[in-house]
Length: 434
Ligand SMILES: Cc1cc2nc3c(=O)[nH]c(=O)nc-3n(C[C@H](O)[C@H](O)[C@H](O)COP(=O)(O)OP(=O)(O)OC[C@H]3O[C@@H](n4cnc5c(N)ncnc54)[C@H](O)[C@@H]3O)c2cc1C
Image (cartoon, rainbow, N blue to C red; front, side, top):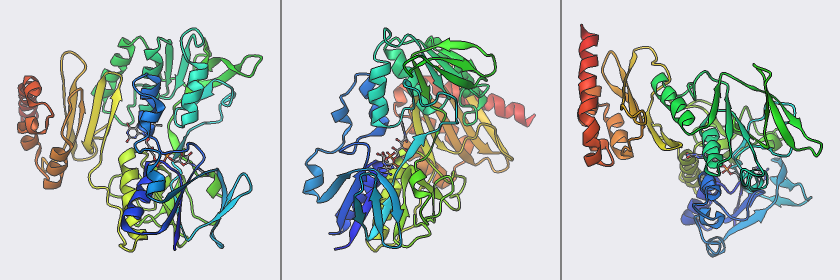
């Protein structure tokens, strides 16, 4: 029986295993160095917030794996020998495969800051990071202040977590406005104000210079590069992005760049070796998508796709229209299609913001054809399937504005804003035409 070995028990590796089992009788092994069972990484924050126990982040009961004949192996793969199809583990063990799926996810970026490996300096990615948070920041007696370095989706989650335990937070963000490499100006500025309203000490346009150690090798302060200021703290959260967790692959003959390079079939340069999820890098980007996409649903889609190929139904990875969602403290964010931080050539943005400063939308459209290209919504929940359909149908922006209530999750609630948005849109359009 063919042996399929998957390195990584995250969403992409586990989805691949489940679908291979649905489609075949192959022998399947999943390897992880992190946890005994698959858990939802996106739910880690809710454990610290006290909304759920860690066990509740595990989507499958522990008996699921044996019942479905999926072998789980705990261990850290040190190297891959593709010539004889062998994995080597740090503990000296090895394992043969017939086909290998690399699904090793990401790791938090560290940019060589002095003191980046001190106790109390950590990312928020692995289960061990959650355990360390409970050691270094269980409450505001042990942790009198935390400093978070890097403003993105994980940084804001960590700020919310620490804030929930009343730990004062200083947030060092390199950009001049929060996440403004991704968000248009109006949205990014609204989020700046929202963060500050939560009494988080947001510092824009600054970088970490170094982490200073106490006599026990634990962080006691940081120094801000631009100002030289020393900020006393008991925890430093490094959340300046993530990158593919593939150092151990560099010594093999599998081609890598930032991630493991794959074609549209998720195949690497080596026969019978595939890569999926956060660690995979498309050799040629798909449409306007980034070659590496560190999001949950693309990992799941890649897992499903590679399972088809491995089971004899060769399939291209086709992620469809881009979408994503996240939360900035109390404000939910969704995006469908493409809304770049600044309109590109022949694009324009229509932006509406509610006077309470917690709800806004930005719609991007083509100025030549009026085609709707994408929408960002904050504080208003939209229906994925409606925007997905409108993008496929290439609807124009007037149609989208006039039918926004169809896309809204709660049309009754939404009625209050719809008119407002339509009036602003007409006013702006008329001004533009004059
Ligand atoms: C705090 C947080 C919040 C997030 N929130 C969202 C969200 O709201 N929406 C969203 O779309 N995405 C979110 N993400 C991103 C999302 O979680 C990832 O895109 C997804 O988990 C990646 O899945 P994966 O299967 O590719 O890899 P992973 O989940 O990283 O799994 C890879 C596994 O492989 C193991 N591994 C790596 N190397 C080895 C080795 N050499 N030997 C053995 N095992 C190894 C790792 O330890 C890990 O267990 C969030 C991420 C974090 C950290």
